[in-house]
Length: 521
Image (cartoon, rainbow, N blue to C red; front, top):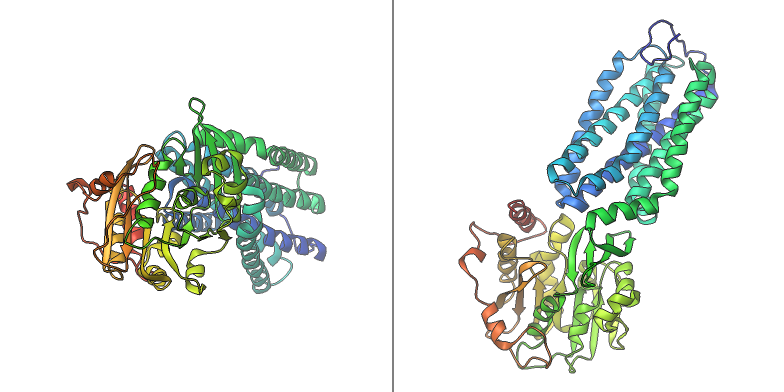
């Protein structure tokens, strides 16, 4: 007798399947559904980290995953013979493919974007196909010991409940505690454990119990070893992803944080979700351009400053060069980011220990919520958010958000926001200016070259029209009154080429503009 799942040499009858075994199969459905949705979320998250545009990546992942499930469900009608053995085979294949998906995608990315996308769609299609096979197979088994209506009701209800468990467990437990690669191995191990449990409990229904047991144990041992080695494997993958030596890494509930150090010139670099945030060799050019024009704008020296983002402490370092400032409030969502800025020795050296300043108060909460709910007002507000490469960040560049910022600015107050590159993303850059002009009488746009990023842009918006740049602190390494005056000039290739609209939460045009701009690079 062949142990092939497709065998038709023998008729299998599951009408006498004991209740405890039926309960085991129903429990397997719940776990299978949980694992399936987690694989989907892992692939979508990896693609968002590496390629950006999270809406696009998750939409593709979900769409092709569901399509592949449909194909798998259709193909399941052609599987005959020992359905329980077929289920175990599918579980083992799913455990291996799903467990390997995250590390494989990270290793594919450095070669070429098209190569990564081929791998991504291969994993999505394969995992979706296997998940699509499982549910009809188990439904057919269970329908032999009860009515089709009851078996469908049981299977589908547990499938949906399992999907809920997986979708909740991934962002709250798996991602922050395990990270993407370890979570992938662990969920694969879970699938393999389900297969092993079914092999043991349903051994009387399998054609070759010893062989299936060997395969199940072998898969578990492989994935268990990979799970235990996930830290070293992750380090290996990240070393290939970032090329430079990684000196600090952390996966917080909100983002992936990596600090690298170049071999040649000891250049510290911070990456968030794979996007470069600063390089030690030229970060001063960025932070001087971000901080000093807004703090020196107008006739009145500022006393209170709000910084939104900037948990690395580098903007605070520049603010502290203005002796008139008596209070700095920093709002950064991620406690791990502010911990990095205050405890990681190379970054503490770089920010001059600014996170320990007596006039600094740190709030680890959503900037949108803080601005909406605070009863504090400020003379200056510095907005240092990442580029609007996903829908969550797009709201922080919206007219609604700027209206709330306007409300907590004192009379004569001024804000500044980093605004991405007017060269690489000109339409999102000028969308920010257009959005600010809805609320402020005076919007000042300027740009500066930063070798690690290219040409970078900023916007200041003031409650008082016709402001002017006052005295700058002594000892700046880059910014001067003359360089700032020149920075307000834009060449033709830094201007928008198509019609722009105000960015709103209800119509996030900046998100579309940014992704269209970046896709040209």
